[in-house]
Image (cartoon, rainbow, N blue to C red; front, side):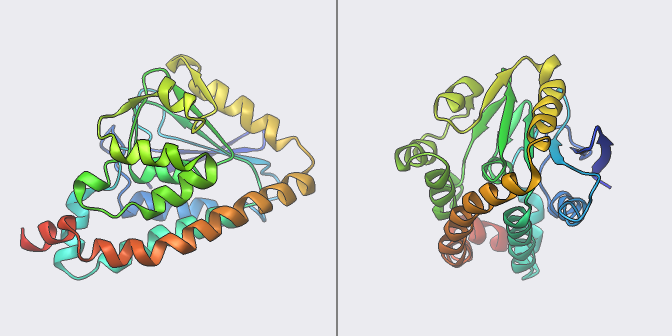
Length: 242
């Protein structure tokens, strides 16, 4: 499994352990996250979830472009889109706290997914980037999610600037909640997961349902245009012509 699962003090800790330290979010990573998260709501011994790439490893370097090329060439790109949407919909349905502990890289898909979590912590060595537009990928889902989390102007700045941003800049945009030294990342993430997990479960679940409702609607608005565009984009054409 490319996602390791352990439980600490009623917190499910999911560590992405792709063979590449940058942790590309290929289909094996997404599928493993889906499998691990599927039973969270029903698990009475789990109060919260912490997702990390591990200390001094990337949280996400984005999707695996080599894999997307293979899928496009074999007309299986829809499988990737369906799996990605399965993860989104699962996250919308989880009523327990989810915390991200991020180091080194938070790029592309992993960045977008982290916007659906309840708390985001990054080290001072983490860089963030949304390289969708330069790669020919339509950015509606980014606009919808970032706008739901913060402001439309922030979504525009992220999409139109192509250079990676330091964690401090992303913190100023209110897209992450804390910046900590690398050696305090997992400790800080676990502490926040335990804090959120100790809140009254029904109260937290009801509040999170309201938050997720807006994110779910944002996803629904974006997903049809997202796939329609990617099948016609420069990225897709590059894959199929390779």
